[in-house]
Amino acid sequence: MEEALLRELFRIPTPFGEFPIFGYGAMVLLGVLSGLWLLRRGARRQGLDPDSLSDLTVMLVLCGIIGGRIWYLIQFRERVYADGDWLETFRLWNGGLVLYGAIAGGLVGFFLLQRRAHYGPWRQLLDLIAPALALGIAFGRLGCFLNGCCFGAVCPADWPLAAIFPPGSPPSLAHGDGLHPSPTLHPTQIYSSIQGAILASLLWLAGGPLAARPGRTFALFLALYSLGRSLVESIRDDHGVAQGEWTVSQLASILAFALAIWLWTTAPFIDRQPKPDQG
Image 1 (cartoon, rainbow, N blue to C red):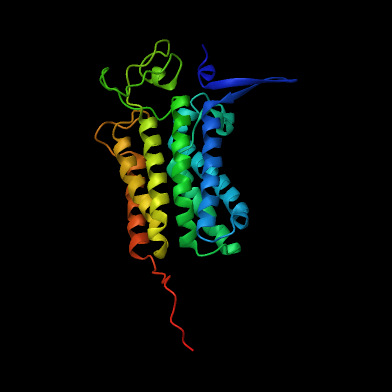
Image 2: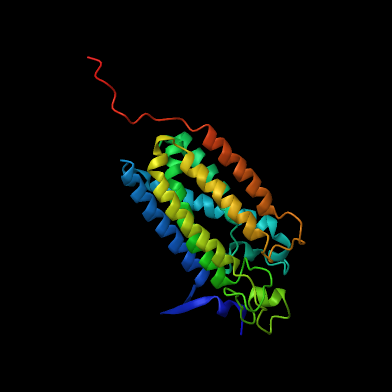
């Protein structure tokens, strides 16, 4: 069985042949749509017009995808171009987005757009993005699980969440000749998906109390995500880093945590209490 067939959810018949729907792309799309839905709800909660942020959110998604893809192609260039096929650059349905690259690309796009068209206080906008981004991560990591990428290290067979990937999948190729199923592995994709779902719920609930200090919701996202990502990285087995060495994402987590501290400590205070009548 070809590896690509293991990643397909189903096929849609068309006059030009069958059109495959890949699990990775479907979950990424669901992540984008659910994130946009939560972002619009957050905008209404803050008294903002969600339609006024439409072009901003579309550009953030595009910048995030571009940033995540570029980071992946740089970090895993030897693996991606092992066969010398440069068209692999554009085959997103095979997987290949690094989340920290997506966050970096989204932030670059955010500040460039913010300079051209002022959408509102940038810290407040980042706070709106935080729970939406976490929800997108939850769905995106499910796509990684269906795709077989971002897999974990070998775990005991009696581990309750142990996962076995089929022949031809990336884990089976990494742990053998690809003709047999993989050994029992930590489902790090599921761990990360659960983390994203918990973060989305927590950030949504915290958005109200933290609204008086714009920037702190996004700071909380960066801090908690970077800590969780560092832990998950320690049991991932797809990055080619020897045990005990720092991975690229763990180093990026240090920068993310430092940025979180800066955003938290420099967050301005907005007095939402009605001012006394000066008349």
